[in-house]
Image 1 (tube, rainbow, N blue to C red):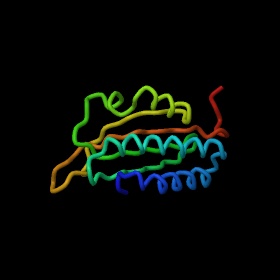
Image 2 (cartoon, one colour):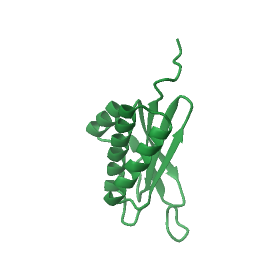
Image 3 (cartoon, one colour):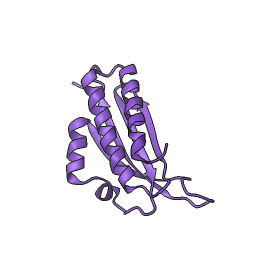
Length: 133
C-alpha cells in the first residue's frame, strides 16, 4: 500500500481484525493496533515520495509478530538510531512485548535499482501461551 497517512486506517483495521481472529484479548489487540499505527507513522514520515508501505503479520504459537517496512533512499548503519526516537521506542515498548528495527535489501526501487527497506518489528506474547517455569 502507499506509504501515506491515508493508509493508516486500513493498517489499523487489518491488524485489529487479525489480532481478534488469532484470539488475542481485546486490550492486547488494541495496544498492538496503536503500536502499529505509531510505527507506520514513523516510517511514513521517513519515506520518499511514492514509497510503498509493507505490512507482514505473522501469528505464531506463542506470539504475534508484525513487521512493517518502507523503502528508503539512504539508511544509516544503525537503523535503530535513525528510526526510533527515545520517546517512540518507549511508546512502542509500553504497547508491545518486543520492539526491533531492521534493514533489508529489496526490489522496491524503480527500473532495476534496489533501495533498502527500513522497518520496525513488533511482537506481543499470547497471554495463554505456556511460560517456561
